[in-house]
Image (cartoon, rainbow, N blue to C red; front, side):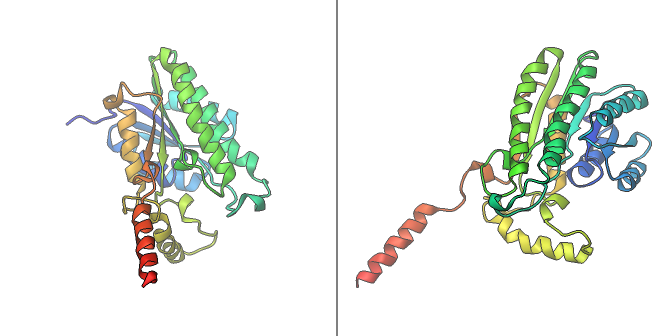
Length: 281
């Protein structure tokens, strides 16, 4: 049985952990030559060694244009080309429950990684792909960029911008045979969604995740906890030939959150009416 990405070369930013790690593992299993880009050298190098000779690690700050240019050059020099650019790296920034309390101190950093990094990563990859037969650019957005809500304003704004940029660049790059898509993960169990505090033990992190689970589930119709591999499987589909006619789309991986409100408010209204009628007696 042939592998989905046999002979392809892929860059995965933020590839040392979470969704990036799961995608690197899956892409490698499916025959791709993978460059893991991350600021965490120790973890990234260990993962590359684990995945074998067709995987390399490249220390990369995705907010730096020079770093991204070097990353693309490294992939081409090491593996002879570039077919897939997965702009996955992202940060949440300060976690203020309300925007009025946000001091905006990390706005530039969030935008630098989440938006500028995606734009520069796409541009550098596309400049190579445009001259070498095309390719696939995949951007990791978020349902926070689709559904308006409170808190994490810098993060929400950055992800909304990634979604718009994805659609614009899909049109801009189409003539070169470059497909551009985005994924919008929902409540996926990663370090980013755990809201843990630095210095916590593994046991403490697990307890925090368990405490948050009912809250995450409250607005998700499908009561199943999303895993990094769920997103990785979607990335595999988008980057494979099975999706050859797909570009400019944003695919939510969210258990139905963006489909609508899972609460039956009509039933709640009927219950309230019944309670009111009962009070007449």
